[in-house]
Length: 612
Image (cartoon, rainbow, N blue to C red):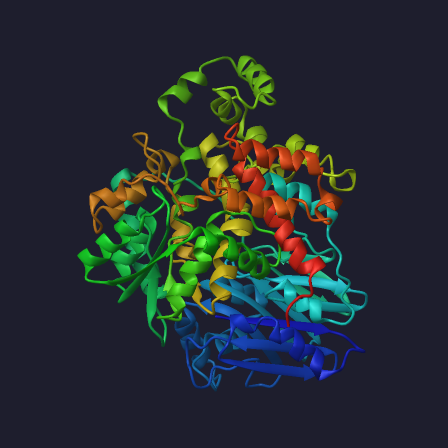
């Protein structure tokens, strides 16, 4: 696991520029750095040593001398690909997956190479013979990849903050992003919050030649349910998890695991049996699941390390989260994940985690349609639609949540796991410059169009696989672990796991009023039944309780009162949201958090001087 940055420029030749940019991502790779500069091409790299500790430094030049690579990630089947390449006479200088990629590129070409890779990756190749740049991002978006055109120059890298050290970079905020951020709690656009900086989408690669960028898709998520029995589904899930976990444990250093009280991480830990597990909780009643982590670890004979996060630490952590995320990020669990990664890094360099199981196997409660909701759906659609319209602006209406979720088709009512504000609510608190008429449903439409003939749960699952997991779950997973120089591996987000999950009928994923049903039954084979049946909780984060305390209420109030806040928001309206929550009149804590985290991020990146 590492980080890279680079640029193409005919007139920026000072070696100090590349080194300053690379230093900005030193947290991603504290073990060593490396540089390649030839003509207009400049590659910088930071390494966290995981495989081939002695000779795995980057950038790596192909044995032919015709290509150079910087690579972030892990290719779990690299030894299989290497065997094929050895048969062709290729002479390897290292035992790294990085060199396998560059050798595979020369042998197979980019399209065939990408079809062979199993793992998480973002890489950039300079093909000297063709004089082109080739960049790629993995199938699911586990590893980040950003790029930017600055005049005639082209920038690329693992984190945006490195671009800020480029002398020609114009730092401007992307006004389009803010409204959508308030709605989603993350930026769902391909554009970043920095104007002119974009995200390469998962399953895509590009070529850059003569100043022109050509982006192509090499992998697409397609649901293709097969005629499969429940027993067969359970058996195949069990085998697939075993195989994927085995691949994800390939390392020359110790591999630990994150462990919560839920079925996903418990399944991974029970299959992998690491020597160490790591857990966090909060110093508030009802927000501590470390007791479950300790219990399971003890049963398996594993050493568990845990930490309790205080309210003061939580608020200090918000600053860290916003800095390392590059863009504002309001998933409440990000702070917990930051401290969890910091704890784990004291003991190991690599951890396994359970991200992806909910999306692949239908684990979110929103995918479940309980009995009462089914009865509600028996009402004529025209009546449900009318109730939906009536309830939109009735914040205190008792049945509003059910009606908003089930009174409309998912295409109009469901925008993903995070839906903090409506479009109208977001526009209402924004200054005119930041309002826009683009709706959340405009962004989700292209994904719903691909599954228009499927059931509602499948539509929602498919949307989350394409949006929520990429720009929220995986972004925080990468940024919070890499902030602490820790490699995170996600066995459920594996190409072979997806190929199975996409074929398992929704009736086996959602059965007997239980989410992730077939997955839970497979997990029961190896973990205690209590763990497999536990309802989805996620990181329990008590922010909404914190800001009812005067100390933290004042902390947020002070941020809302800073002069730059009035540039974006109607001060009276955002303070009203905060005061209503503080006084217990309405639970607006999530909305307050979205606003607060944006302001913390903006202050760090646009008001204060970015740290070197």
